Length: 166
Image (cartoon, rainbow, N blue to C red):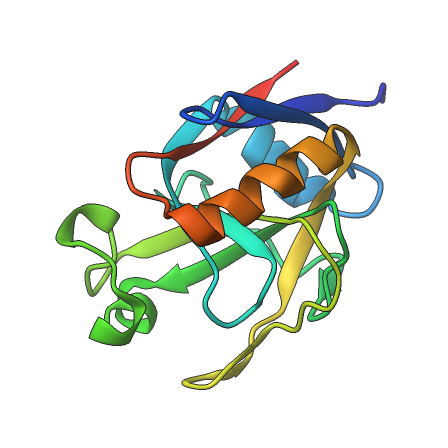
């Protein structure tokens, strides 16, 4: 299979980067994401994992991918896939609005980009939260990291995280 690439962007800030799908390490996850593209939603900056931005989506795969190529210590440029039930994210501590698809009985997919070092996927409410590493940023991580730091400091209001095929 030929290498597949996507663009990851922050629309309001006008910043994008290029990622290579890790088909050899996470084939089921890569195929599920690829078939669902394009995707875009409100962006959030992590509270627990540290240097992470992410967006939440309704489940888009026929079946949730298995935990392939897992990590609890993502490195800069990793794209990770997480799947949660709405009740796992439904507490007020997370601060999601009603429209964020975090209702009981639903599956929520979290697509995340890690932009700096020293990340640890440990949540005080539930413990370890392994993610599937399905992509790696190959161009533009420096610009994206600057925008992510700005998002952390200035806020995410009105910003979206987008994924599309190249």
